[in-house]
Image (tube, rainbow, N blue to C red; front, side):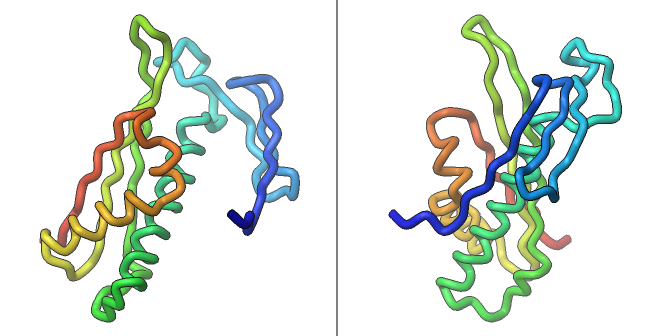
Length: 143
């Protein structure tokens, strides 16, 4: 395996601290949501970062699948993915769950489902979470 890119990000102060990427574009204060016992401040939280990263990566995976299948009629710039990340607790501790709502313009349901299922097989975030958290895939279609 050849590493194509590495990113380093440092978090200080846990969930109510600050996070910054080594090269600078990420620089955020963190806040704990009220539903988790925090102050609900205006800072971001790890679930938001994870959701943003997963959505972007999954969208890229859909684009790669479309390109690989040489589907020319799909405007890949209009693909969107909304990731909802749940922070959950049970008797075994804390865990995450994810729901990915994917919109692919101008595809029928069968093709769209094939594309998001194929993307789930190649997306690095999907591979990292496979068999670790529940991930629900949804296809959103033009109405």
